[in-house]
Length: 117
Image (cartoon, rainbow, N blue to C red):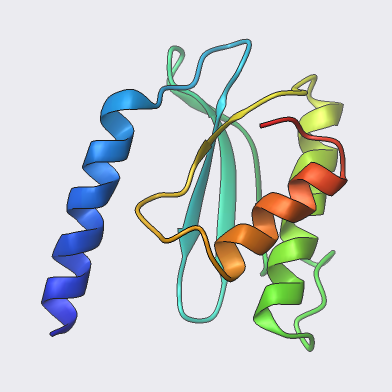
């Protein structure tokens, strides 16, 4: 059962990545969600490097709160770092996850902090 979920996510992720690429003007916001934490990166695919990254394991995020509150905080933290790096608009890559729960909370937190999708 677990293998089927992983294979399904990989197939969805590969379909998404066929169409979504990050440029220098509009880099890609990529998400990885584990059972305990959530990670986000702003990636320039043309140069092949990560511009900024944030996760729920950083010191600016309260680990005592719920996972959805942590995801919102990670989104805000990532948007602040991206603005400092000169990035104002991104292309959203949900990484094969459903746009619901923690993924949606991270995206909403980034939008609240001023990042445009």
